[in-house]
Amino acid sequence: MMATSKNAKLTLRNPLSSVFTGRFLVSKGWTRNWPFILYLSLLALIMIASSHSADQKVHEIARLRSEMKELNSEFIDTRSRLMLESMESKVVQRASQLGLETSEHPPVKLKAAE
Image 1 (tube, rainbow, N blue to C red):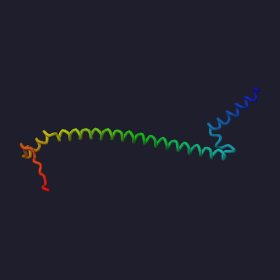
Image 2: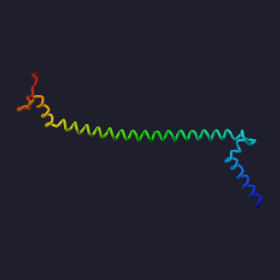
Image 3: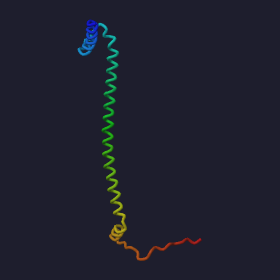
């Protein structure tokens, strides 16, 4: 019983130690390990590229949100200034600067003869 558990520990430890030390790369059967290593490397590169792409998108979204808030506040400011400038008192004041006066009589409706 004791020998089988000791052998199991050695076989488990030996592959792990060869992976951590890199001995499996130069062992007799190293050629069968390379496709798996290349596969893992490709997966790691894909994961890094995906993470980088996600980070870029997060930064772009944050920039666009900031720009949207700025444009929204500019729109509100412009709309409020337009409302103030289009008030009747402001229009009358600007018209008087041009020498125009408000009419005392209401406008007359013209009807076309049939």
